[in-house]
Length: 563
Image (cartoon, rainbow, N blue to C red; front, side):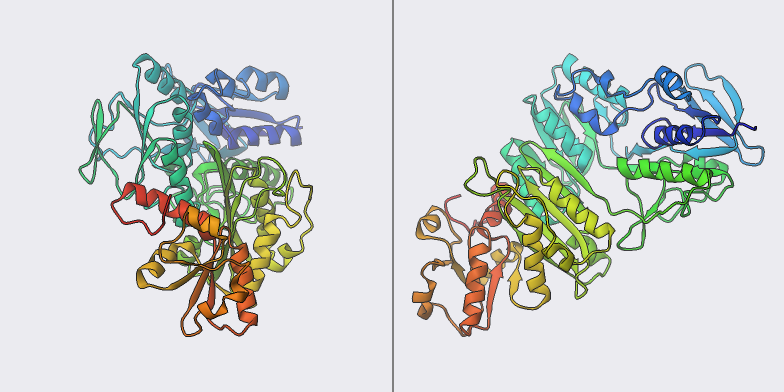
C-alpha cells in the first residue's frame, strides 16, 4: 500500500486542523506540517488576554507542541520552517530553515496552503518602523509587546484601528490602568455592527476612560506621541497597529495560484486552487458570502477549521457542502458583550438589498429576578420576503445565545415567521417567557404586515430640530429624571383621558423607555382612528446611549435633559 504524503503549509488554526483531520481519516498517511514561526497550534484569539494578565503565561496560549503532535497524532510538525517555493509539476516543496537559512526539498501528493493573514503596516506612515510600534500575529508578538510595556513603564498607548483585535487590546490594557486612545478611520468602531449600535460601544469605551477618535487616521509616529492626519497630536509611548489584515498570498502568487477579486487565493467549492493537488484554506482565501452571493474574505477561527475539514474530506473523496459564510462573531468589552451575525443595515444598503430592521430592548430575564439587564437586539430582514438577514446584540448578559439562534436560522434560509413561534428554553433565571429573539421577530412581523410604522433613534435629533410632536409615554417620575427637550409627557396610563392633547393633523412620534409602552400606545391610537402615529424604535434607553458619546465629544447642543 502506498502511503499518501500530505504537506500542510502553516501550523496554526486551519493548518493544524487540516493535519489532524488527515490523520483521523488515514492512519497510514505521511502528514507533515511546516510553520515558519517558532510555535504551532496556538490560540490567536487569546493573544490580547495576556496583556491584562488574564492569561499570565503567554506560553499557555500554545495548545500543542511539535512533540505532542508527533506523539499523539504521528504528525511531523516542523517549526521555523518556511515553505518558499513549490513545483506543482514535480509535486515538491522547498523549505527554508528560518534560523540557519538552509534549504531542503520534500515531495507531496496533496498540498494544503494555510499561510494566514498579515497585519497591515502602511509604510507611508512616518515612524512605522520604530521600536515602539507593534502588531499582533503570534505568541512572539504578544510577548514582545508585554515585555516592552513593562520594562519601559509605558503609560500612554495608542491603538490604531477599532476592529476586534484593536478593541480586545484596549479592553485588556484598560484593566492595567493605562491611558488609552483608539484611532479609527471610519465613523464608528466595529464594522460588523451599525452606527446606532456602535454608539453604545463608543459610550462604553468613553465610560472606561478610553479616548475614541473617529474619522481620522495615523500620519506619523514619534517616541512619545502620534500625529493624526487631521494634525492632532496624541500622547503615545507605544503604538499597536490593528487596522486590519491582508491575506498572505506571497507563496501562492509565486507558484501561480490564481488570486481572486478580493485579493485572497481563489478556490473552488472544495477549496482547490487553480493548481492541481493544491488546496488553500483559512484567512488567505476568498470565500462566498451566503447572503450576498459575493466573494469576500473572513478572518475567523471557525470558518478556517471547517474549510480545513472540507478540504481534507475532498482529498479522501468524502462529500463536501460548502454553503458560504455569514460572519458570526462576538467580543467582550469591559462590562458589555457585543455580537453579530449576517448582514448589517449598512451592508444591505451597500449590496442594494431591500430590507427592514427592528430594534427591541427586552430584559435578559424576568424583571423580578436579581441583576437583570437590558438586551439591545436588532434584527435585519429582507423586504417583502421576511428572510432573516442579520442581527446585532449588545448587553451585559450572554447575548451570544440570541445571535447564535438567529445565525442558525440564517443558515437554514429561515424567515421571520420561523422565529416568532420558535420554542426556546425558558426559566425566569435564564430568559423572559418570550425570548428576545421572539420579541424581535414579532415586531418584525408587524412591520412586514404593515400594521404600524416606526423610525430609528438616529432620526430623533432631526425631529427635535424640526419641531415634530413627540410623546413621552413614560410615567411623570421617569420623565422628570430626563427626557427629550421638546417632548410632551403623556403616559400610557393616562393617554386615553388626554386624547384632546394629541393632534390629528400632523405626525405623532411616540417613545418610552424601551419601545414597549410606546408600541402599545401606537396600536391603541391606530384603533382609535389616528392615522399618522409612529413608534420610535429603541426609545429613550437607547437614545441616551446613542447621543451621549457624540454630545460629550463634540460641541453640539444636547437634545436631552439631565444626563
